[in-house]
Image (cartoon, rainbow, N blue to C red; front, side, top):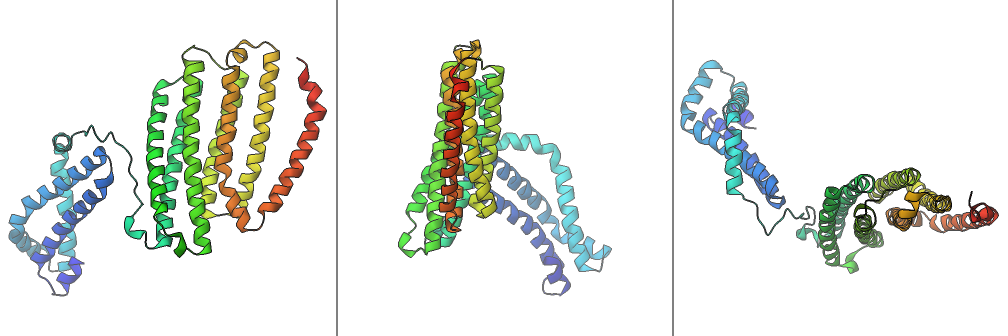
Length: 374
């Protein structure tokens, strides 16, 4: 823009050069304002960038008249001169200030020390209070924030597997810290949605409002379940130095992988409302339920076979796969709204009833296979 204005004769070359320097300062100010809601580490980066930009402007601006004369001598094309100055100004500034990165980092740490009252607690990013009077925008903001909660739950699940397999107490503490963040965002989203007037919502917006609050509650409950799992692992496995059997660990790992995949699919269904993905998610819910039942039975068979690891961790193993099934049901709940809107929910439920009856008959036929030790 500055180059075009200078070429058109609207502004002088000197003013155009000042605009280039001002644009650099402006982008630094924007970054600094955007980082205000981030933790102290993020604010330090934005502050350092702004100070570097400011120092460059302070050094160059006193010589702007001389720079104007030099550029005018080397090129009669003002557009080229302005653009060349922009490139050279940033390149030279970067080269000269690069050795000062470490001192700048130390300065930013002194200017923005750790706040003991703010232990890097997470803050909402998208819950704009100014959008409350615009329901569509408010619901979109809340949806984006709920997806952040989903990302935190996914992070908790990633941390959970090392706790199960390796008794990783550091990851256990990390899970608790993330759950505190989940609880904070859950409260903020819930209070934000409570301020949205439902009387002004259309039928479609009411449905979306319900979907958002339902997923928010389900994700918060999933976080609580993960914390409960960690507590059980610490009390029944880590503290007494016990281990799962090899077969039991393989079962848990498989359920964990499918649980993680269903969370990702459930968030996708919530975001996109894709009917095929919703049906796939509901089918995965039924499959996961069957898997939990099958693994509970194979665990009992290992008990009957006097497998020492299975005996020592029996209650923990059964609680773990049961909690995973409960979490999986929470993740799959996003499918119901999509199927209901398409008029397929009742049909899917009838199919589920018939499938349950068929499974019951098969279980009765196989009951004798599990009633005696192998």
